[in-house]
Length: 450
Image (cartoon, rainbow, N blue to C red):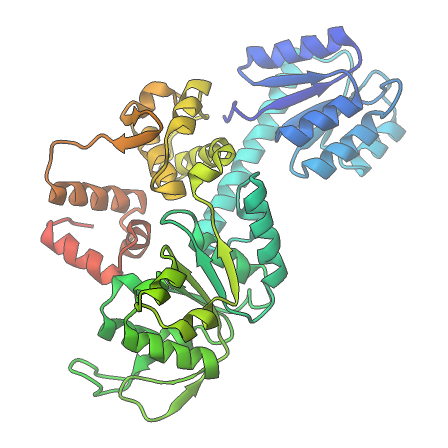
């Protein structure tokens, strides 16, 4: 049971309020209290409560129904339970009609409260696991799936919503691990092309020849081994979106070919004579400063301006530290569910360690750190010792490197990725950030079975 999910108790009677809070704390839950509706709403805006117990009759200001409605405006997923000393059919109907999940009568029975909370949280846990599974199966992410309370990120999300249904090319800049693909998916699945394909191409993972065939496809006999016609990623993305990751790494020839596609939405397959026309929205991403690449002659200026119609620069995680607790709790919930391991959250001491780290690998590094901690955790809560291997030296942090070869480190990373993805090579290669064919080569080299 996820006992780290917080609970709010709202009652103007101090004895009733503190008694219920004490019962719940004895069961291991984190509980806050409020003596009036306005205080409850203020708390709900600051904290994502799983359950709110709200007294129906509170003198002055908002009554229980109004308080519940305001809480739901701030936290639509919160389960509100109305409590009252005056049980009537009319009040029950009104409470349920306005969105109450349950209705209980004073004096409250501690055992009844415990069973009710347990039942609601079990349902929430199941709903959360189902949502995680759906996203894992479809990898469809929208704006509300991006976790943040950072003002800069909120501005970015507002911009991506505005441009979601446009055809304009988007260039996403940011360090490795900042979530560029997640933002690209949010743009696609929040717009008018959401029912059409979202196709990802990692430009840095392939040689020039392979990338050209990957993007544009090829005809039978175009080169040795081309035994039939194969459609490229642009054709497969027709009507939808193609996401060109690490666009700054493509060769000068492919830069010219891509410029033509951007200008005319037409291209030829490798070895082909028939011109293919497509309707594709292009979202590109890079961890490089393309303006500097242009100045240094490594990137075409005309292609840069074609790509840079709408620019989104994602801040590094160290620039949005207020998101670390939110992201960490999210990863604990998701990864513990995937691994089938009961881990309820992070202690304040553990969060202090995470907040002090400089995160050179950004959100991806945080995710990997949380996964490692969950795998080795022996208690139901991640604590400071679970992150003792994150070595700190002042503000800058360094990894504790085991005394093994680079090849052994790579082998261990591949084995861990395969275990997490239950032997699925496609998903493991995506998690590792390498092409599937590259992963197959490494599996053979390290004699790893899957």
